Amino acid sequence: MAPVATPFFFYMLAGLAVLSGLAVITRRNAVHSALALIVTLLSVAGLYLMLYAPFVAGVQIIVYAGGIMVLFLFVIMLVNIERSSKERRFNRIWPVGLAAACALLALFVFAFAKGRALFPDRMMTLPESSNTQQIATMLYGDAGRMGQYTFAFEIASLLLLVAILGAVIMTKKKI
Amino acid sequence: MPNFIMSYLGSTVTPGEAGNQFWALMYVLIIFAGVSVAVICMNWIERKALAHFQVRLGPMRVGPHGLLQPIADALKLMLKEDIIPAEADQFVFWVAPLIGLLTAFTVYTVIPFGPSQAVSDMNIGILFMLGVSSLGVLGIVVAGWASNSHYPLIGALRSSAQMVSYEVAMGLAVVSAILMTSLNEKGTGTLSMIGIVQAQQQQGVWFIFKFFPLGLIAFVIFAIAMIAETNRAPFDLAEAESELTAGYHTEYSGLRWSLFMLAEYAAMIAVSSIAVTLWLGGWMRPFPNLLRAPAWDFIFSLFPGLTFLGLAAITFLGVARMPAHSFFKIQRIGLAVFAALLGFLALLLLVIAIAGRSADTSLAARFREGIDYVYWFVFKVAVFMYLFIWYRATWPRYRFDQLMRVGWKVLLPISLGVLMVTAIVGVIVS
Image (cartoon, chains in turn orange, blue):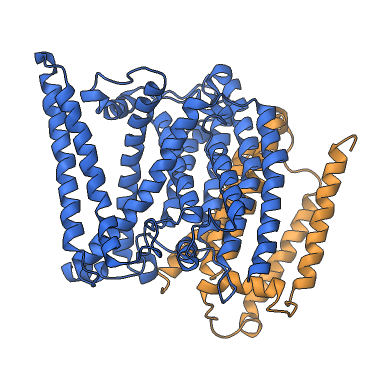
C-alpha cells in the first residue's frame, strides 16, 4: 500500500528519538535514562519501518528494546542508585566526547552538503513484502551460491559464540 | 459514504493491505471492544470455574449466578481511591501499567482472525508479535521498581528473569514452526501470520501434527513457555501471594491495578492466538481439505449458531432450576432475558449461515465465511483460555530455582534439538 502521512511520521519519530536521546544523558536517575533509551530505540525502529526495512525494525524491537534494555534495567536495580545519583555528572572525559560529537557533526554536515552526489537521485522502491527474503539471500546465498555477506556473517557469529563462551567461563568457577 | 463502506466489505485483503484507513480503524475498535469483553467474560468464567474446581459456588450474589459480578468489580475499581505511595517514583509509577496495556493491545494488529479479518498482514508478523509482547516485561519491571518497596521489587526481578529465560525457548519453538512453512515448491517460508496459516492449508496439515512428534514437541514447549511469559500459575512467581503478597503490583490500587489485570488477560489471549495461528491452523475449520464439499462447509457453518443455541439452552435450564421463592423473582427474570438474548444471537447466526450457504460472492456468503473464520479462531483460543484456568486450579507453584532449571536445562535443549531435527527432516523431505 502507499505510505500515509510520511513527513509527519518521519518528523515525529525523529523528534522523539532526539528528545528522548537528550533525556538519556540529562536525567539523573538511571532508570529514567533507561526508559528514555527504550523510547529512542523504539522510534529508531519506527524509522527503519519507514525505510521499508520491517525485518530490521522487528529485530531492533526484539533484541534492543526487548532483550538488552530489560537486562539494563535488571542491572540498574541491583546497583545502588542512591550513591550514583549524587556523584558528579560530567567527569574528565568530556573533551573526548566533545571531539567525537564534533567529528560526527562534521560528517553529517558533509553528508548534507554533498548529499546529491553521495546518494542516488531518486528514492529506491523496495518491495517491503520480500524484505526478509532479500536479507536471507544476502546472508545465506541463493540455491548453491554463497551470498554477498555469508563470510562476514559467519565470522560475526563466531565472534558472538566466543563472547558467550567467555561469559560462561568467567562466571563459572568450575566447569 | 455508504458506497465507501460497502466497497470494502467485498474485499479479500486486510484493511492494512488495501490501504483503507477507515476500516483499519473500525477493526481496531472492534478488536479493542472484543478483547475487553473477552477479558470481562474470562474474569467471570475463571472465578466460577476455579470455585467449582474447589467445590465452592463462586460469585452468586450480584446478578443471577454472579453474572454481573465483573461489571460490579469494574465499577468498584473505578471508584476506589487511587493511592500512590509517598516514596514512589510518581511518573514511572504512573506510566508502568500503561506500558503493559499498550504492549498487550498492540500485538492485536497482526492477529489473523481470518484471511482478511485482521488489521494488517505484516511481512514480519510473528517477529513483531514476539518483539512487542516481550516489551510487556518492561511494564512489570518498572512497576516493581517505581513502587519503592521490597515485595514489588523482588517480584519484578523474578518476573524479568523468568520472562527473559522463557523467551529463548519460546523463540526457538516458534522458529521450528516457521521452518515448516518453507516446505513448499518455492522453498521460501514466511513470517506473516496470515501466510503461516495459509501454509498449513496448502500442506494440508496443522503444524502440531507435522513430522509427527516434532511439531507436537515444539507446540508443548511453546505452551509451557507461554504460561511463564504471562506470569500465570504454576509459574506465577512474580505475584506469589504466599511470599510476596501480590508481587509487582502490591502497591497498586483501583484503576491502575485493574489496568494491570486487563493487560495480563489481554496478553494471555494474545499468546494463545500465537499458538493457535502457528500450530492449530488459525481460522481454519476442522478438515478444510479432507471434507471439502460445499455440504460440509454448510454443516460446519452451523456451528456458531449451534454454540449460542447450546449456551441459551443451558441458561434456560438455569432459569428453570431457580428456586421458586419470590426472593429470586428478579434474578429469574434477568436470567430469562439473558437467555433470550443468547437465543436471539443463535437465531441470527443460523439465519446468516443458511442465507449465505451458496458459495458465491454475495454479501451474505462473504458474511457467513467471515463469521466462520472468526468463530473457529475464537473457539480455539477459548480452549486455551480454559486451559489457563485449569492449570491454575491443578498445579502447585514452582520454586524459583526449579523454574529456572526447567527453562534453561530442560526446555531450551529440547527446543534446540527439535529445531535441528526439524531442519534435517525438512531438507530430507523436500
